[in-house]
Length: 378
Image (tube, rainbow, N blue to C red):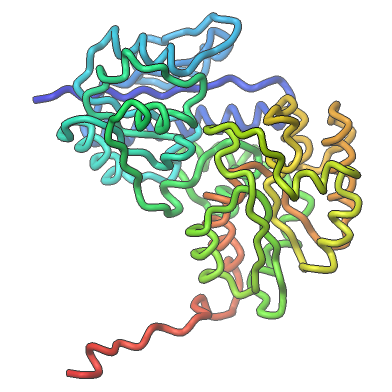
């Protein structure tokens, strides 16, 4: 019987209230992950974090693997773990990933890691949050990336077979920002530890209650901007009543760097979004915006405290002048705006499509069913 080991990587956040909120939710999600892993027979679970977050270690995990380097390197740490334990198969999770995975789905990941000849199975090949890896010793000689997003690229470039799970709410949802928590809370999604934490800790958000009703309004237009995947956009459009438009750019920003400056991002940076939001208000009734791709300076983002404060429309807490001015313009926009990261326009769209119907008396299905031609001809 081949051995399968699981590892959960947890990156500590800063000390601002919203950063503490996200980190505590990731810890709760990690506990839920460990429980589901053990329920399918995967009892060898490592939890990798820094000494700063030692109190985050979930129960029933293997001894803490601390990283005390000044700069954490995902690939180097993963390689050391594989060299140390020599597992036949490996399940990798970020502590914010897999919140909507059920035990049966985790069992299928473990079966791939145990039974496939080699290679990886990713929730998102282009930006990995979790993965199953068969014959992980193949990774030892590779130039593994500093962050997990690019793990699929590193394996594919080395000639290892790579596969992706279907895009749906369980594979695309990742706890990365406070907005992710807001949507998980609104849809009561996730494990028991995570939901218990969110029910006590979730702060109110200034625009979510204005955006959600528009998603069930047939006359409304809602704009999406940023790293929107066409498959997810298609699902979102089927599930909501409003019409949608999308301004898609910057995909692969973190996993595969590019020297190009996205067109919309250049327009936004010219005046910190003043013209952008005026024009957006003439084109749509609400907007869901991946702000990271619009505001990253040559791929570099400010500290999480600035990004999270922007998501929650708290410009006074933002040190970066561009992000502060952009957030002020978003708050003053004539239409309600949701700001977030890549997860908002990926897994977040699945959750928004669920959350908007809670308490609504409109029919859930708003699109006609395809006609069963084959049945009609018999």
